Image (cartoon, rainbow, N blue to C red; front, top):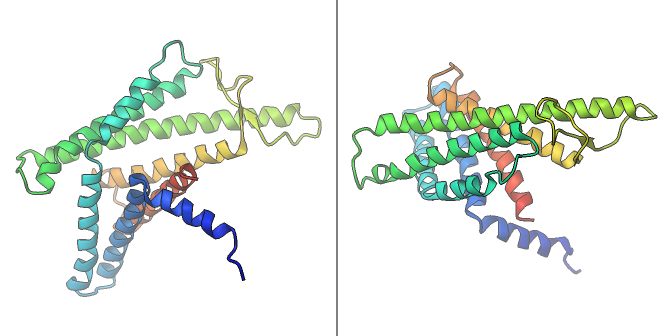
Length: 251
């Protein structure tokens, strides 16, 4: 019997996904937080230190691998910032500048992170490494705050547009597409463009990923007392969303 036609397509898609650094990084990120969760669970269940150390070692090795993969990535983000600089007044200035703030914060984080890679591999000992590491996390958290703010702003626009669509619809149900702000910086909703259901889903997923990542970053900064189990689950959720987005991008 001939193999289903979907198999070659899936295989080709998987090869494209696994061939991208971002795709492999997301999978490693998922394994990293899964190992962190297992280390927490075993320690809580009073397993032997050797059993816990096995998962801690996996986590440390993946953290180092991902750190080396990130070296130089700040250039991509800075290039993205340059290309997105407005040549004229942006249609949606609030969302535009929140996005720029996110990109600049993450680019700064990745720049410092790249500079500290020489310490991570033991090539050069940096005396101020703890301070630089904390600064990296602070910049990451700052970028996430920009991202969360932008996500909430866009969701608010979608909800208001949907409510208006329902009110103006003859059957009171509205359509599958809504409009969001593009021209007025003072109002949340304008007349165009139309945001599809798929785009709305992407906005909500990205917002939830940013919130999950912020729990991880704020935990590293000791801003809350959530245990490693909760933080690990947040990290795994963000990783799964990242895998989903990267899978779609390589389709």
